[in-house]
Image (cartoon, rainbow, N blue to C red):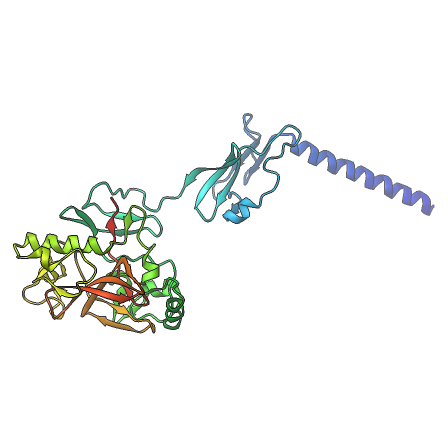
Length: 343
């Protein structure tokens, strides 16, 4: 009796297994409809997805995970992996495997609709969707705002360590932390200095900070700007005041510094200043090697890409003086950046 019962159970299990195999086999080779309603697949589709309140998610992989996919070059039963599709979480692109490599099918463009064509247009940094005014001064095209690219942020102690090790360091005036979102919303004396003054970069961070198509100005780029303003204002001896050398330092010129600064702040802009060239210089301060911040509302400092031994050239203007200042600055310091169009 027990033997007969066990035999019946084995036969029933076999029937269930056959039914399950039949179900999965027929599902694989038939049209499939996935829907939140009772719908059949469209006769032209092997897979028909329908929903009024849900979407379809592609596999989301980083580039490292994507490159670890195995058997892309293999052919299984005459079928290869051509047109395999994934969403690349690093590049923000939908990619398709075709012809032995990944091709971009569609990419997210945070700057869609903002097209920089000529100097004076608004430019958009595709890395973070920040937008900047631009201005033509002589034959040069400058950003008319300090750069605000902030891929990471270093606390005071981290700034010291990074700078001592000649590594990039980024900061927002007065913020002593390492959370980018916090830094971008940080208020210093009630002002969001990230939005109004931009980011402070040590020299190593400055080297790669400007967006594609723009560059960190070198020492000569700044000299061209100084000379142009000097000559355009009818000042004399501009070539002598602003020479193309790497030895002349300190305050130079007459009133060129006054002619690029934002007016409206008495402590920054005296009675003779006006932003004739729409450069919109603001006193954004600096950060020294220890990580401490100084000189907000009194000094504006900008890096150049030109180095001289352990230091690098920079430019500055001060609230109490009308001239441009040419400085040999320590690379561990953190200054603002004005990018120039890379022609």
